[in-house]
Length: 329
Ligand code: PCA
View 1 (spheres, rainbow, N blue to C red):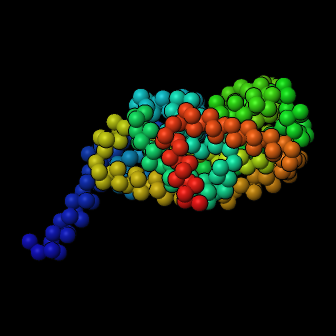
View 2: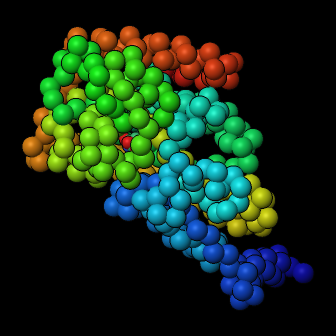
View 3: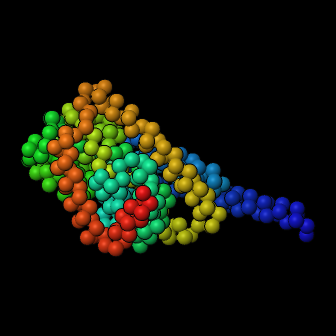
């Protein structure tokens, strides 16, 4: 057989594999629960990812995105993927740091506060974090950053003297600790339920990006946003390990190609939108400003304490991430 014939046969076989998944009815339908609003860029990029997966797997994997916590609430998505109730899903990574401390790598105050630094931190954390996800029966596909985190309040706040007794919506245990250090009363609430919590007075402050304030129209209840830019946390998209292992290598490669491309486009979208969100908050009547030097100094002191606590729970693996990050800078 000459080289040309061999190559043609290989090409034909590849086409057959991709085609057979469809023709033999082997196309798999995967439901993908996502936690945030359908119009949020994370969810829109989830749809971009699903389209790419369909294309790069020759139709073998057909993902339907369910945004806004509509299929599983944000707090239930990880378990749904781990147990195979769904084959794929998206979740806010540091929400699970109470169970697996390493997953709080992106919730360390004032360590990596730009997109470039956040990407560097992820680059050094990735292998360890993905191994942790694997231990939890999940295969990491891609992560995507939120813009920098700042504080929302229903009044002007200049220091912790103004935050005592304020009801605070937290999104993980680290932010609950942060709130307690400021004398606030934390309650964990999903972004999808945030507007209702603010409307009913369950919470009147929270830490988040401009993105979630914009999605939830928080100007209807709150007046001030302080651009602290404490950290840029990430959402992650994961597959169930058994569902993943059952796929042909070609199909896995197609999904990974889609994941790598979506990781890049999603991070770019996040950065591109970050100022837009602030403009929208202001347009809708909010005061968007830097924290006062006094408040910022208090936040930095609390932040240093939080990082020290994280290092205690995340152990040598956590320390190795911080050391590698510092060495890379
Ligand atoms: N928005 C999400 C997580 C981080 C962010 O910016 C939220 O508030 O739930």
